[in-house]
Image (cartoon, rainbow, N blue to C red; front, top):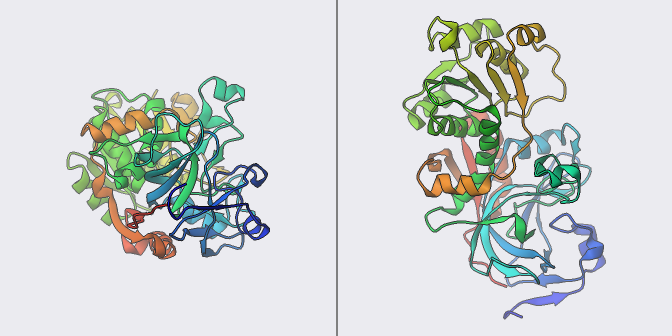
Length: 395
């Protein structure tokens, strides 16, 4: 046992405060660790509040690792869960620590862990699938119905100092990839799965709808994949200006709210020329907004692909069905990602992608609630807000 590391059985107070930080039943956990540092965390409550709580620290069990989370990016879904309490069928029925875009350092390994040691720097793949269903057996574990996803109720997330996570879903970071970049691997994985599923073609035109964090990563990844020309769209001129700075070779189009989907699509298509052949083959829709999805449908060339990466409303009722049908436009969707962390790390380590500029604001863990509130206010002009823990935690 490390100096200062005290282990006690879980008491009833701890049971009521938090369920297991990896999402497993507390019945399977018998020990708490009491390290010399507190475990500040940020919860979203069932009544739409943010609550900072010192959370329990659990001892890692078979196949698990205890981490210090060094960096967590704030995702739009974190804000959405806070303000609305749900995304589709995912409902916050109780208090839950948020956060899923994360990187950290290994503090302690449980029995049976191989390939990781204390001191290793890792990125966290937040979804832990069941490993038993037919989708997991097919390798499509992102579609597992029993996935335990960090930061989605009831599975506590990474907005805390200490977190237990299965070693299988941790990925070592090379020395030239920072914790901040490690946290960006999660949104990069979303984009990589979308681009892989869309099947971008070298030298063919692409449109990226939305210049938020996902759209900007899609912009960089599409360019790295050989797409040309590339147009990025958004309502907000400041975001488009940042996109142009981030990728100078791209074209920008400010969406005109006074135009309908066909009108905005016509304006976007002008960047590619008048011939249908040179119209954009692929549209990466990164907003999830119904009007933007409709615009994407009219923007793609006949026989092209619209890949919806953004998360939107539960129901969309105004999609141009007959246009999609008659033009044989392939409307596709993704759910998170699978097998993207290793290639994502290779892209960052090898210099294929440089995403460091996307981190616009940094907050300490103790001010995580301020970070979420700041990120939720579009007037602040933030791109990716990061919560970091500068403490050198021990056990």
